[in-house]
Image (cartoon, rainbow, N blue to C red; front, side, top):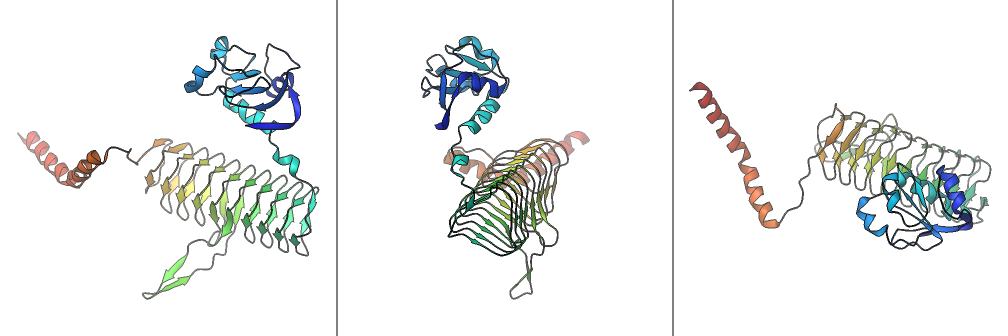
Length: 345
């Protein structure tokens, strides 16, 4: 549940969403809530039919919903074809975080000489900014965050507490980096001489486009030679690993625990479900969706939905299927012999 630092009215909400409504235009709106929990001064939304049962009894001041559900709404309704998008836009009005950003450099922060600071930059306690860094206007550097030498951070970008941006990284505008993420750490590069490993220096960097969001404790490694490149409007969940020289196209989304091996190229408008693994040196074309826990070992050249993970089942059933899996090759060969015999006869 969220609350705005200032009060909006129902008319303000409708105006922000560019929708019509019927009801008390001056009704104060102090927050957002679910249909079931909304108070008379909060706006709720209906984006999933599973919650349709809660619509008839909601006490919300207004409900954001699709026109097909409007006649069933007992309170003022704000109709949109995509009510979930409307909810996303409203949530920004009630986010208390920007109000806490006070421009200036905290006395405990360490800012090296030669750093360029844009207008209204906020550098919080114990942050470290190394030499040659360029921060755009209204950048927020959270407490304990570190920005390595020669990085460029675009306007209106936010680093939450304890973010690490390593040297030579370029971050676009309006980027959000959540706590614990590391941008530009060394890629996993080693050469074996038969007895031990020799580290390969990672000489590239990382480039993040505009409007990128990276979840907590995710890692985007720097390139071995060229850069690791994340396109515009890419959304990356928590605990995601992106290896060196990976490229991800604009508007793609990666759910939690995705792992992408080195030099793989993911296209635009792709969606990778939780736990998806992509092998290295692959090409995934635009418009591909890979469902959760799938392993992709070959390039994908046609858009569509792809799956490889198997759903959970009882252990007894799984044990039987595991035995049969080992028999598949033998069964396939026997079937081929039977079909060949039938054709010959």
